[in-house]
Image 1 (spheres, helix red, strand yellow):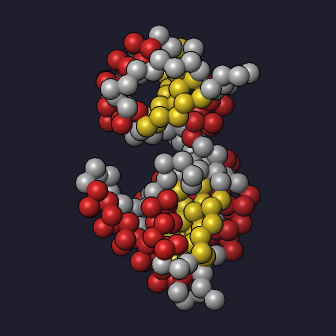
Image 2 (image 1 turned 90 degrees about the vertical axis):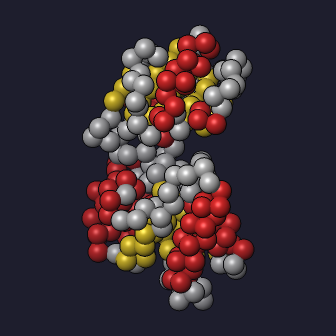
Amino acid sequence: MKGIAYGVGVGPGDPEYMTLKAVKLIKENDVIALPGKEPKETVAYKIAVQAVPELADKTLIPVYMPMTMDLNVQRENHQKGAKLMEEYLEKGKNVVYLTLGDPTIYCTFSYLQKIIEEDGYETALVSGIPSFCAAAARLNIPIVEWNEPMHVIPAVHKLGAALDDSGSYVLMKSGSHMKDVKDLLRASGKDVNMVQDCGMDSEQVYRSVDEIPDDAGYFALIIAKD
């Protein structure tokens, strides 16, 4: 019997937001994959180990996928990560890949999943609380109401587009181009809130475009409402 590769969401930062299913899978399996060169230095590990202390004694696989726009480098690292996980799957070991938020939303596991499935192994996804839902709860606001639409956008890839559709916008991956994103938000005329590092010790809340720093970090999530 070959093992199963699980993509497991650990939520946005607060270990109390981890699901019972995620905790159960970590406890029941010996091999845990984490997105980084040093597993114990990854954000996903630091979140999960607070809820499951025995994670520290598991076999930890480093799956390194550096942030780059070079598609060839991306594909090379995806292949390396998938093959590393497959070494354990072939031995009948399940591999639990821990990821921030939810594994179905802009998740690195998606690339590994395709390769692993093509190579004949089984995969499964375990949902976690998405960062934008946790951020809205932290802000104490609904994202959408009644018949409003919601637009979830990787802001760094949409800087040339106006936010002119009705409803609410969730802007993710904004940090490295925040100055340009702020110009986009001002032009939209929408009510803007941002949470950085939601659920972490370094969490910061901003209630307007002008409050948002130009050098906001990677885990900056913006909700813009009519």
